[in-house]
Structures are given as C-alpha cells and as structure tokens.
Length: 330
Image (cartoon, one colour):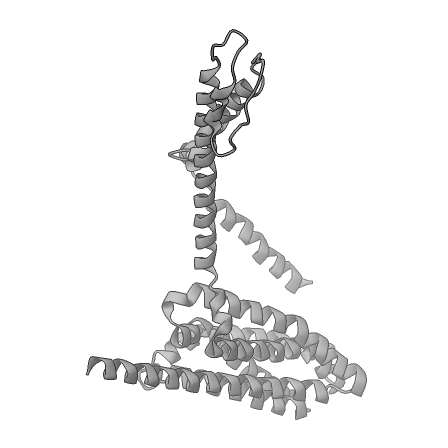
C-alpha cells in the first residue's frame, strides 16, 4: 500500500507540472489570439452573401441562351422583354464570387499542406525503410520484452525459491533502486575518456550483460545470490535505458532525433505488451519460472546482436559514403 501511495503522489505532481504550463492571467487574452485571420475566414461570409444575392435575384426573361460553363459572365446573354439587358451586376457578382471561392480553396489547400509538412517534420516515416533503424528498433523491442518480463515475474520467482513474502517483494524494490542509480551514473560513465569514442560498443556490451545476468538469475536459489544478481541486473537496465537517445543520435543523426526516438518508443511499447504475456504463457505451460527467465535471457542476447549489426551496417554505410565523396573531390 505504501508503494501505491508513493506512485499516486508522483502522478499527482504531474497535475501541478501541467498547471505551470498554462499562460499567465495577464497574457491569457493574447495567448490564443491569431495576429491575422486566414484568407478563407475573412471571405467566407462575403462569399456566401453574394451567392445568396445572385441565387435569389428575380430575373424576368423571355428567352435564355445556352450558358457557357467556362464563363460565368455568359449570363449577360439573358435578355429582358423590352430588348434591354439587365442584371449585369449579377454577372459581375458571380465572377467575383467564383474568384473568392477559388481563393478560398487555394488558401485552404495551402493551410492543409502546411499542416502535413509540420506532421511529417515531427515523424519521418522514411526511417522505416532504413535497415539501421529497423535493427535498432528490434534491439529496443527485444530489450524491453526481456526487461518487463523479469520485472513482472521476479517476486513470484522469489517465492518459488522459498523466500519469505517480504524478501520476495524486496527483490523488486532493490531492482528499482539499482535501476535509478544506473540511470544517474550512466552519463558520467559514458563520458569517461576511455569510453567516450566507443560508447556505442559499451551500450552493446551492457545488453550482453543483461542477458548473462538474466541467465544467472534463472539459476539462483539463495537469498544472497538473488539479491546481488537483482541489483546488478537493475543497474545494468538503468544503464541501458538512460542512453537510448545517444545511441539513436549516433546511428541516425541528431537532425532526425525526434522522429527516430518516437518510433523507438513505439517499438518498446510493443515489447511491453508482448513480453510479459509470452513469459507468463511459458510459465503456464512449463509450471516453472526457469523457461520464462531463459526466454528473457535469449531476448537480451538478440537485442545485443541486432544492435551490433546496426553499428556494423552504419559503419559500412559511412565508409562507402566517404569513399564516394573522396572520389568526387578527385
């Protein structure tokens, strides 16, 4: 119950954080007032009024010639009984109305194109056609499947090993604390001179460590071995999660960070949905947690393999691009 109270307090802080983003009272009346209305809003009432005037005007004619569809001004061919022409102004109004309607449509088309361009700038779907991104996305998907599977099954696995209720729950608490510490220290570790130029390799090694620790965790049976393995596993997971942005920038470029990170989070969301379900199904089939933890270990190793493959592909692509640029310069 205490943990749920803490989680509720953290979530309620988001309400205060959201309130801080509201406009100030003295600026509220200017916050959402556009400086200039779009052209189609300015002309809409005028266009509709002119259409009504032309539509409901009473024009008495004896005969009417065929109206040319390409020119609204052909209404001038409508002749009155006395041989004179009238309602010429109506023809001019129609021409003006059509011009305003055309401007209205063009303005709306321009606004729609601007919205489409803005959406495309936020989410570059062309990344889904790049092998490097696909491999990075699969690496993050498998990593998240392994992480969430172990998080869900860890307390029950501890109970199956003969631990007391408080000890089994403390395994999950220790994993969360170690994860937080790993996130805080990951930036300092990655920024060390010995790792700064090879941080992507260190990131892949952390995924290998995750798979190895998950394998050890599956065969641990005592309280001491379980708590130590859980702390190492939690630290390593925090170490991995905190550097997702850096690895995305290294492989895909900082100019595509918003799109790449958004799609990576989508991959991770799929892993969160699939991972615990699959791990729980394996437990139901085998009636043992060993298969579920071995499954998580294999997923972590797959994540490391896809990441190293993405790094290798990125390096080859960059070498080929540099050769082409060198040949062109010569």
